[in-house]
Length: 187
Image 1: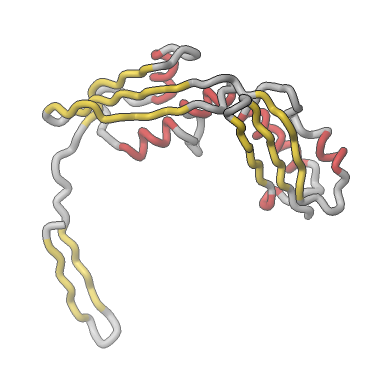
Image 2: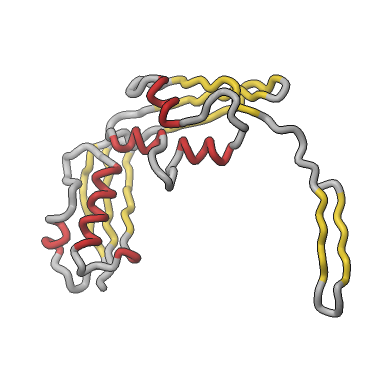
């Protein structure tokens, strides 16, 4: 912020002008992946969708790495392939002129198995009606896409309110399992 000005426009109104100097614009230069074994560097780079010369944007980088609401991201790709205990750490390692090099360290961890499934919030709908729509079963490998599919299936039953639906995975990294709680609400 270079400067600001406050101008009175009457007894109850003010005008605030803020003058901003944005500074230099930076660009992505080199993006390196470390620790990835399940997916190739090319596969991860394709999912990330950020290329050399693109304008540097940490919000976009984080969205493409973690929980992109508009589609596929790197962490979702791993979670769809049973890796719940993944850790992804992007780090700026070098700034040269107007370009930034990024290093993305991945700890894949072990594939997670589902231990227990809990259902809460159903007061009218029988638990067995809900359980038959659940695509995740104890002993199966964890899959984010199966959980999302289950949410869709439960929503179309017509008995449950999709607005009140929630899924809470409760991971246990010690034994490599995850309990999943499906929270539902009656219509």
